[in-house]
Structure formats: C-alpha cells, structure tokens
Image 1 (cartoon, rainbow, N blue to C red):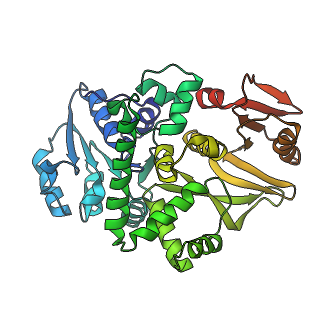
Image 2 (cartoon, rainbow, N blue to C red):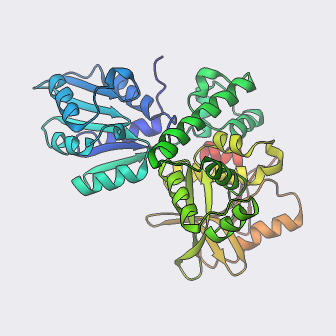
Image 3 (cartoon, helix red, strand yellow):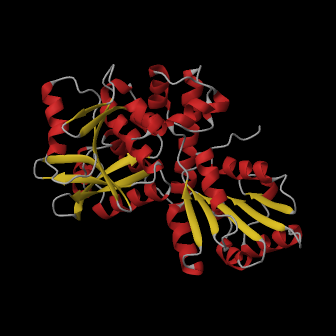
Length: 401
C-alpha cells in the first residue's frame, strides 16, 4: 500500500536533510513512524543520484542485524559511492550499539541518516552522549483530527469528531475501517499489548503485571486531573496494591519513555515559575486510553476533550504547562519564543456558573497575552467576551487559533 503523506511531518523531515544532523523520529509504536520513512523514500525515489539503505527491524529479513558490527557490514555492502546515500533504520533500538555506527556514518559526505525509535530515554541519552547536539528529534503523534478525516475519507462533522474522540488516531485503523466496532477494538487492543509487552514489560523485566495494569487504569481514569505520587500510592493501597512510591515513580517513567503517557507540570502564572508538586497526565492516543478505561465516553467527555486539546497544542509546537492562580486553575499555559496563550477547556458552556468558572479564571490573569475557551457547545460561533475568545472544538482542531 502506497503510504499517505502526512505533510506536517514530511515538511519537517525534508527541512533537516543536508544539514549534518541525524533525524530521529520518536513516538509510541504504531503511530506511523515507519510509514513516514516509507513515504520519504516514495517522495524522493525519482531524485537523481540517490541511494536508499532501508532497515526495518520489525521484519524478519533484518533479524540477523543485532549489533553495530553487523549494521556496519550491511550498510557498507549497500552504500553507493558517488551518490547521496540515505540510511533509514526503523526501530533502531533493536540493534545493540547502533549509536556507535551512526556517529561514524553521520560524518560521511553526501549521507543523511533518518532513524525511528520507541523509547525516549534510550534515544536521547545515548545520542546525546555520543554526538552531542548533532541530531534533530521529530516527535510523531497519532493522527490529528484533520489527518483522521483525510485517512478515512470522512467529511468534517459532529459524527466524525465523535469517532475521533472514541477511537483515537492510530493510522493502522485505516486498514481496519471504522464500520465494525469489534474489529476496531481488537486492533487497538493488539497495539496496546505490543506497546506494553515490548516497550515496558520486556524492556524493564516487569513481573508485577497486575500492578502495571491497575496503575494504567488509574491514569486512564484521572487524565486532566492534578495528581501526585502520594495520591497514587493511597489509591493503590485501597486496591490492595501496597507498592512503594519509588516503584510508582519508576513505572510512570516507563510509561512516559514508551510515549504511552505525557506529564504536564504546573506553572505559577503570577510568580512566573514552575511548581514542583503535582502534575497532570495525558495519553498519547485516546483509543488506547479509552480501551484501558472502558465504558462509554459520555461519562468522561470533559477530560477526553482536554486530552485532545493538549495533543493538538503539542502538534502545534507549543510548550505546555498547567496554570496555577490563587483564584483557580488554568488548563493550559502555552508558550513559544516570544509568544504565550492561556486556554480553558470544557465540554459545554451551558450555564452562568460554568461560564463564570471558565472565563473568570482567565479574567484573573493580569497580562495582555491572548486567552481562549475551547468547548463543544452546540451552535457555537467564534465569539469574544471581554477579550477572551470562545472557540468550538472542531474549529480549533481544523484551524487552530
């Protein structure tokens, strides 16, 4: 199947070609990193004097490449002098000592290297140790809402948005289709099992799988809520899981390293500083989160929407914190160089009390940076209330701010 170009990522990859940097595509398994590599080859295969060396460690054809010496031999056998060589390695962490090889090939003339990996700590620590800042990480997420509509040939509608909210954005769902719910959840369940088994249980030699599953269920139930290791420990004890805070911290780091979860720190808006205690957690893909949480979306729609908005803000390139005020909490403080935005997220702004809660917190911020409320309020048209812009979720996911 010819890969579908995800233009946002294609442009970012192409922008770093020829600049002497190793391009590292990171992200959870099954979010489409492999297809971005294949799409790169497809888009550039007609370019004169190019040679592609493509190694996919998830295919048995490449099982024999297990260490850097075997990797060197394969690359040397396939490299073509006098051309621009592209070395592409999918799931590079499956090769012992891979970073030693890439450090050497990076300095070769007319050579670019693009790799993918599914473990953030391993990639960042090993690359940083050996080649300093000579790599560019591009974080790949599951499909954005716009990509979801393109992949599934769907019109933008409330029904399409509901499918996105419920099933998430794993690109592999294109092959499954969205007509048979049993097939959809079987596929999502298979992805979940692969991520947990390969990137968490096997990598970290996990024995207490019951605790792992209970902890993930806790996180699925508490997305968008401030949490702490102490609170998690108390909950686990209530579930007859008496595990140390140190163990909880370790498991959380495993989930983050596998890109299953992300954490967002609190930021004191008036004091202009990060706060050390408590943080929020969000899932990398909502389909996986919904699988773990179970049930229907009506009961947890607000936190699911918040997760969607968070992921889209990451896609837009913002650094994100939770805003802390004496008067309450601001869901997201989003920053780029010389730019800042404040965002509140809610399902419906249907009562004066809800309106006062969401708009009131933003009114307490005494600066002139833009402020937004994002909701699914029916028949909502973009509006302004005392300098605070109210945007519908679908509009935000299509057009941003």
